[in-house]
Length: 223
Ligand SMILES: Cc1cc2nc3c(=O)[nH]c(=O)nc-3n(C[C@H](O)[C@H](O)[C@H](O)COP(=O)(O)O)c2cc1C
Image (cartoon, rainbow, N blue to C red; front, side):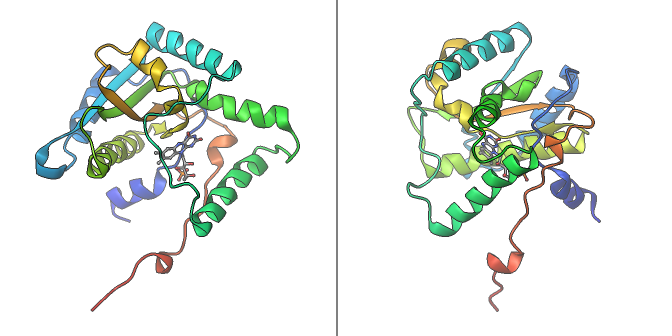
């Protein structure tokens, strides 16, 4: 298979990491490459923060405290339509049930379900996390598309380099914490977190591979 297509097939969400850091020069090369993403009129409306070391531990501590005390959710944007179209809802349910089943968590095991959700606010223990955002005072639907290209470039680049990542909306519900911890972010609308690093070896959760629709369900040839 073509190497780029093989990387697209290989990428999947990683939810358990080794503590090893991705070297800074590798990260710079990755970010340079991700920044080659196209954007409308080359506006390049993205902002990217890399958080690691003591700064990440301080952020993680605040996130866990927010989750543990039930801080009300306040995301900067609504990710999905509400309600979801029925077909989307069915697929969302399938992946939600699927990951619990994969982890051996029963329907009524509220404690383990809570612990599973809490992992999101630990950034799955990743040693490095990127936060992608855009300008809060001026953005529109297309801005999210442009930023999404960067996010995908980062994820695919990490896969190509032998690392893993997990895009995350969940931490966006406490984006005020990001504003508190990340310098010059007052006018940032945070879009996604991206914990990344070396995938934990022999990790069970990392072997979870949600299926995809056959392309006939969403791809039409018109000629
Ligand atoms: C923008 C975005 C936000 C996501 N947020 C979360 C999240 O908060 N927590 C999580 O565990 N997975 C999250 N995911 C991962 C999806 O569940 C995952 O991509 C999907 O189930 C397909 O699985 P795969 O990435 O392993 O192929 C998110 C994915 C995207 C694209």
